Amino acid sequence: MVPTADQYLRAFTKCQTEIRSRQKLLDAHMSMPIENGRHVATMTKLADAVGYKNFNAANLHYGTLAQIIGKSVGFSGVGDCWVTVLIEFVPPEETESGHWELLLRPEVAEAWTRFMAGESA
Image 1 (spheres, rainbow, N blue to C red):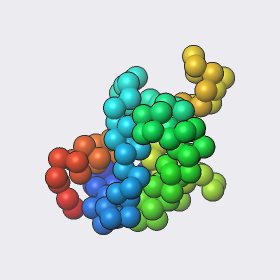
Image 2 (tube, helix red, strand yellow):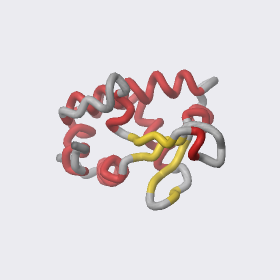
Image 3 (tube, helix red, strand yellow):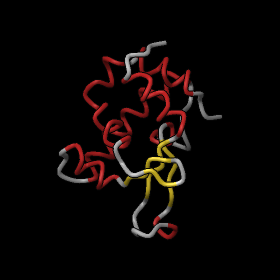
Image 4 (tube, rainbow, N blue to C red):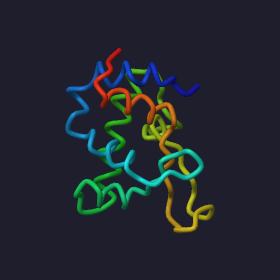
């Protein structure tokens, strides 16, 4: 079960020191275009937005961020893929770009907006 926005907000508040160096990834994802009510990105676009040399660095850091948040909310993601705590994947064959697309979970987007506005739980 996907955590609620309130649960994500509590996790962001509790883990803010641990996630500080990686929060630019969530900021970048929140700045991406919205399609069907969801912020849509690729790892390459996120890497470019935060100044990483390639998508591998974005994969690593977004996964680490997701693991920190996932452990805090008690959600382990799908299999060993922690990033699913924060996003859902759209496979390349279903996208116009031909790349994996990352849809930010609406609960995460709501909680991040509230957190960045100074709300804490």
